[in-house]
Image (tube, rainbow, N blue to C red; front, side, top):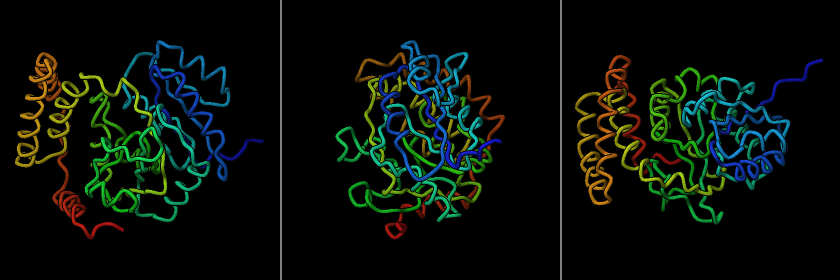
Length: 302
């Protein structure tokens, strides 16, 4: 007799983070109050992450990528394989001190049928201060960290969503490899008329891994993917207004830090991939941009 499918599928993309993944899995298997499965997608880690997970947590659904594809590919593969109604996505350098997190996330989605996704509260490694670098929400961190409000952003570090909504929105854009893939997926969710809620009562702790601070992310993936997202999602006047100041800033940053070659490589890659983006260009509707603008108003907090 087969058991009922899990309510929540936890999807963890993993690359070269063996010890932190094992710590995260220990937290997850102490969760209570809900049926769930855990899917780890290993992106060809050279440190033995996949074998360590298989040995320590045989109950994990372990997927091994045949080649390194980046976080977007790994997250998509996990979501596609998931059996749960709800997806909880966490990065492999996260810990989950709240043993009721999965149950609370499912309850919040059931209590807000208009919401396709929930953005978690992200704490820094000390477990108390806010993870400011990942606060890209429309409301100020200083005044809204503890308030719930509609947002146009979520971080892949910690979020929840309805699997059907994620699939309908097209999942993460794999062409981006890493960085800004959440931005574009959030745009696609909103463009379908759905809602993303920031939920401060759904906290995780982010132990920022050194790989996240690599200069290549800042001077290659960031400007390249800003261009690629603008080409796919922005109407032309808004795209130019968005890109000009950002590319100027990124150029200056690369020049000051001796990374000009990476920045030029980002522009060359954007030029090469831009043709593919233009073939599938689908700018957000005027109504979606109106909704995004309205989120920046002080009275938009719930």
